[in-house]
Length: 340
Ligand code: UDP
Ligand code: MG
Image (tube, rainbow, N blue to C red; front, side, top):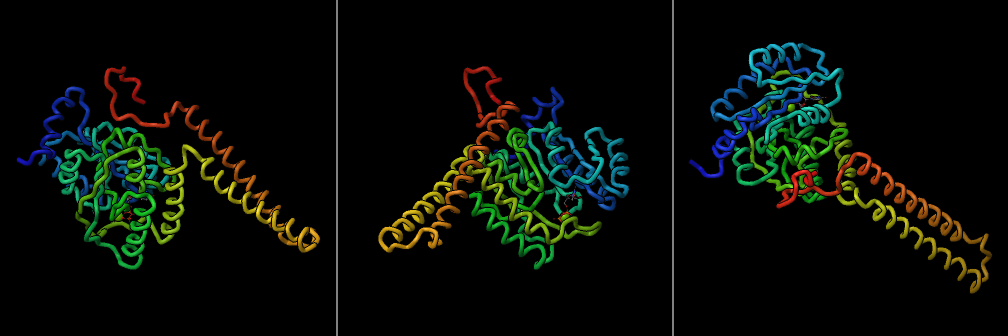
């Protein structure tokens, strides 16, 4: 037997069964996937029974308009480890994942798509990596079964860009199949369509992130829920991620720096105006540089003001919700509630 494998996780699971806490939580967003659900459930439980791990499967019905939820209820009736959340309307894959992460009880959380494009047989490999000490293991669809021009090419470019901007180098941010240590991923708050950036957010919290190749199958039933518009969204989201990563706790540094640079430009233009006046005898009101000086100064001051307001906002954000500006991995000889 390999050391550091999922078998070790199973061994520690015996402790957890006393508190009936499952060892892993599989989370699955579902939006109009009626053709896939039974098959999916069969494949997941087959592999999980095989590796004899304690588990729960949380399906989130994201406002499906087909029979998805009815089918899920049927599955849940047969097995209490299958847990369901039903949204009143479609909130998107990110919200669905958040809802599942919030209620998940497992130590390790593994998201999976409902469309059978991910292969549950990769789960033991992900768990092996977690057992090696990683907090996040990202699936990499090395042989991705999607169209090249509309899917694989934009995704390849997006992954390069995201990796270089965030400094977390992964080949496949878009692959849903990943494994997260629950204590890390539960700290990540997700908005919009940010589920793609979870590994980057986890890395910001100090997580150890790695990746392994996983299988990928073509979608055989149901339709993909995304079009090309996601390219723009990913790009904009990336700007938010970069900003949050670098400056969320000190916004005045970014706004203030821009503001000061603009004010410096304003002073240069102002000095040039005075120079023209006293040396070349150009009337100030005839010199366009004065306009530049005033314009840069006003915009610069605005930037600094926005930075100050952002500083107020982050204080409200952290203090009103009792959020800490840090995360603690472990404490020694301190009461456990000093851990946020
Ligand atoms: N999904 C969802 N809500 C949405 C869109 C998608 O819950 O608004 C689910 C969908 O049912 C699937 C997963 O998210 O389980 C990934 O969606 P899809 O397969 O359409 O994405 P693709 O593989 O084409 O990128
Ligand atoms: Mg898919």
